[in-house]
Image (cartoon, rainbow, N blue to C red; front, side, top):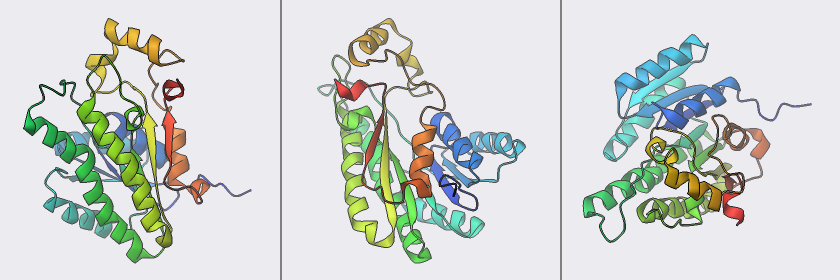
Length: 256
């Protein structure tokens, strides 16, 4: 039987690749045979991740890029394409979160999260989408949505973050519809809360543990690796007839 999850020879570009889920995603795709291009703002951290992954036998290329400097995205994509010869998979993982109440949020904070979480995803997807179109063999784009792509959460303030993730959902659907004729699938993963640098100051608090009891039927945060199956599915031939979808990995959070 064909191994529909095999990624041998594929090239995956992953943003937010210097820590957290980005590193986890790199290991997951590399374990299925993919070559990995990691992108983040801090080159020193990227190079440390590169050394660790190469020590495990994986092929890794790193590029420093601030995704809010939109003019630099084209050059970064060109460098990855020139290094590996193709780009077959894009994982839009980079993101930030603010907990500022909507009534108090400074303008620059709102604009910053929009640029990182949403605008950069469009600009990078457009560049990579053009590469995939020119290659003529299709491609896979996987966006990081959230439970907050579809639900808000009281009493925590998630207005800015949820707005970006709701935007990711509709961007995913819209690009999927437009690019299906090129055999480019565009899907999104919707995690609830997982341990990471971005969430560590929140998930261990007594207040958040009460939130988990109220909102999440499984009553816990996600564990490392629990997003890997969805990622590999969307990146591989197993999902060749799946596009425009948001797969919630949330312990039941969005069922109630």
